[in-house]
Amino acid sequence: MTPMRNLPRLLLVCALLLTMRPVIAFAQPDSRVAQANAGVVGVISGGVAGTYVRIAADLAAVLDDGNSLRVLPVIGKGSIQNLSDILFLKGIDIGIVQSDALAYVLRQHLFPGAGASIQYIAKLYEEEVHLLARQDIHSVQDLAGKVVNADVPGSGTAMTAQLLFADLGVQPVFAHDDQETALAKLKAGEIAAVTYVVGKPAALFTTLRAESGLHFLSVPLTPALAETYLPTRLGAAEYPGLVGADAPVETVAVSAVMACFAWPASSDRYRPLAHFVERFFTRFPLFLKPGRHPKWKEVNLAARVPGWTRFAAAEAELANTRH
Image (cartoon, rainbow, N blue to C red):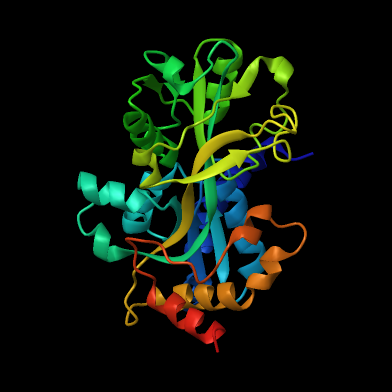
């Protein structure tokens, strides 16, 4: 048993060790710090229930070699915020966004210089507009004046919901809860519908059944919507509990894009980003293997994104794959 007279000495030693610990922890050689950060590429994705975060996780699993390249997936808050993070957040080089986000940002003059600083590596896949409603709501028009959740402010869903309902001539009352909270409110009858732009199948909806009193609404492809969106369907293959085998639900889709900061070739950040791009193109067949998200099978690396400029390293890799 420790004698009481030795306690002050022991406490003093412990105090000295505690004060020394930060010095030990942070007194790393500059070369070690530089080495640890040299090959890191940050990828801002989306919410935990969406497709973006799973795509970012696949990027890390396939491309990260733990040495010359380390891919760090980061949970994000949607397309508009992701563009902001690419522009201003230290450590974020890449973000997954909706293809209409850049035009929206430029039109609204949200981020000066975004047109020159934001480019893309590849078009990924189509994201479907999911409009889940109570059974007493039979059409989009029935949502006029009713509460419709449009995800958190700054998200791609919030942006698309604003554009979509305006083009359809319907004025709901928008709420901005996260998707999980909104679904709980929809089940409780507190709101009329939930809007979610996400690649099907959305994990948030796959376990729902018709007995829940909820169903997908059809989104008609009007001439105004056809200028920006593509026609698509939600079927029983993705949502067997909500959609009948012979009754697919018509809706619209927007493209997902892997965006990046347009680092010049002379900058320190260009090298790890170019290395990421090189591995992405050369190892792309691995994304098509079992265990990866099914949306990878929709990716056409050569596809162009109207209104966007492709990152120089990606353009070079694309040219190499054609030879």
